[in-house]
Length: 197
Picture 1 (cartoon, helix red, strand yellow):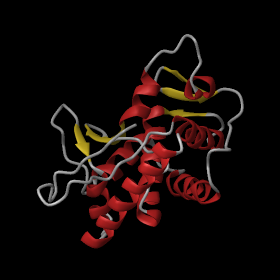
Picture 2 (cartoon, rainbow, N blue to C red; picture 1 turned 90 degrees about the vertical axis):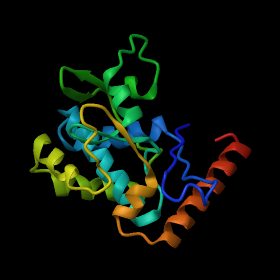
Picture 3 (cartoon, rainbow, N blue to C red; picture 1 turned 45 degrees about the vertical axis):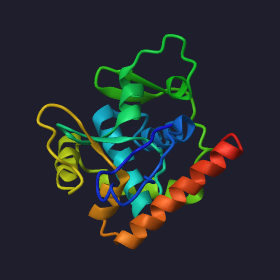
Picture 4 (cartoon, one colour; picture 1 turned 180 degrees about the vertical axis):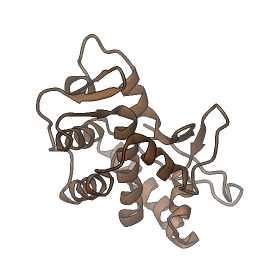
């Protein structure tokens, strides 16, 4: 589980927006994007597309697709756990990610067929829109685009956390809307714990 906390108004709130990383759903989203790109793309571009999709899902539905933790890095916002999956070696090939996606040099490649079962219709719609919007952009233009987002802060050679609250704030959500998203995330996590999801 990835738990993200915000520093904003932390003295007034005990609850934080809580997200749970979903490797199957993240793998499905990445595989869907790779399939649209003829099976491969630079992994930095893939991470940017997944971030844009999560950001759009936060804008529309107050929740992400991947449930990943976000960090500011030199080339813009990054999905932290997804980045680790891309960079790690898994000789056993047992995880959903390693069964579906391999990294060769700086490229992510789709191997086999993607299981899109974990994705909802609205999530696929967001992925389609993100892909169409960025289809002509190379990875560096995408980095420039994500540098323009106000939730990204220059980490000066390191990395810093991006709480979901900061993304919602950057998207123009009101304090009340952010509070509602926070409460919904806590309730959703409680439901998942109760029913073992």
